[in-house]
Length: 358
Image (cartoon, rainbow, N blue to C red; front, side, top):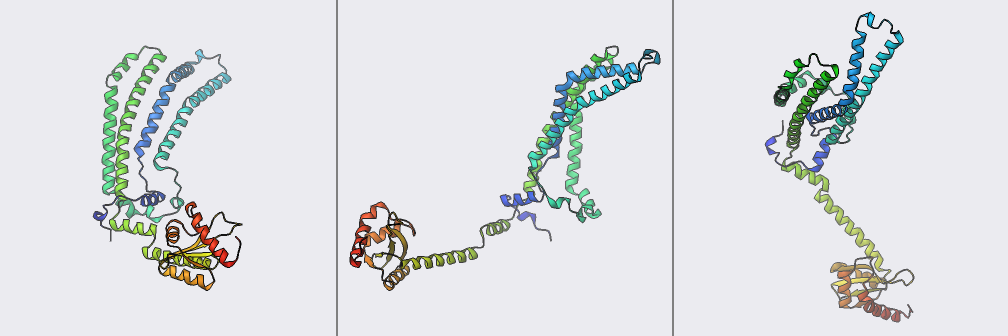
């Protein structure tokens, strides 16, 4: 059963958008690519118009010369005819090649900017639904197809109207060109074609801008999520709270085991006396200052004291030092400078009691 779209009130999350992009579901406007291609083509033609008119005039004159009766070129050899034809072909290629390359680059760039680099291996795999007549008919007579048809007819009407409006006066001047030389005729018609082309390209560019935002809106609307989907995605991304809680519990237990194992290597355990316990170790050859190897409060503090007594580690009651170390120093870190003197006195007492010289 189709999912109720009325429940999809939440905007798509970044993950949802990225997943859709990987499947090829992207917001892309073909009209925008068309507008870029047309504008770049007209622009390149405008840039090459002076040179192009000169070359086309020369080619036209040569063509007309060859079409005259044999009396006009009876002395022309076949090699000269080949030379003229080859020259004309190369001229056409040299004039059209920059335009074609420019159009290819701009068109590809416009598509790439909209979609980005996207490679889908499944796009080239066979899919029976793509050639299904039923699926094809459903797409053909869908509401989206009707909307696209109306949009297409509207765009044709607008573009045609713009072209006719721009050329309405200039077209009337074309019959008056009879009797002018070939260069003048090509110049006037070329300017007219360029004028109409720019107007049409501009109209298509405006329509393409609207179409791009419409396609973007439709894409965003199609990816909307329900509140439950957003919640499930967050849960999937962050992990199940029950599992995360269990993992944290195991991590704390492992940390506590390592900490308790370090108590037997400590030089002294400082308490306040019952609620807090901090185990310190100082090795003059490897440490710059005493290090906290274990600490805890309540039951953990009691367990640290028991282990310390079991392994013969001195337990010293020093409320201020114990509270400060427990609050400020993490396990595995050196004590702060402010506590050097107080901790040094405690260690000195321990060393004297053991008869050891630090």
